[in-house]
Amino acid sequence: MVHSTKDGMSERLSVRFPAERVEQNNEFARLAGMSRSDNLRKAIEEKNEPTPAERIVFLSHAVSAKQLEINEAMDASLRDGLAER
Image 1 (cartoon, helix red, strand yellow):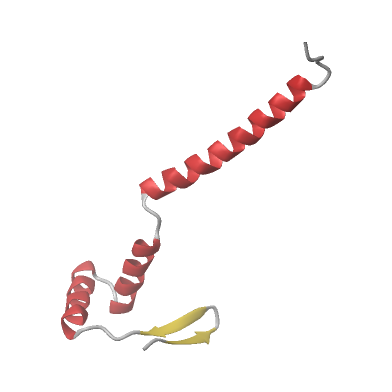
Image 2 (cartoon, rainbow, N blue to C red):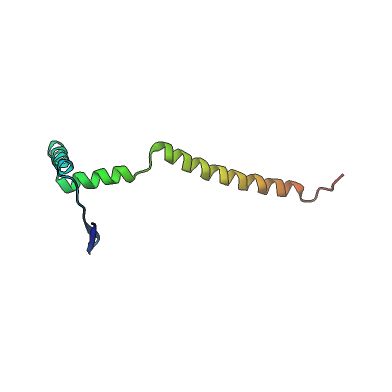
């Protein structure tokens, strides 16, 4: 069950984990010198970040769409004023 309450600019999120996962998080946080909350926050942020491959695909699609738009505009301008033979 997840509860979320707003507190200013941040929100509180409550999530249940198996005991072994909690202990694993505690150990990782201790070794990294961070709080348990910060360790979980960092893990969630990293999980939700797009991978470099996903970024490349997104940018490739964006560039392709822009290039198609430019090509179509160029084709239209080249046809202006030209008579068909």
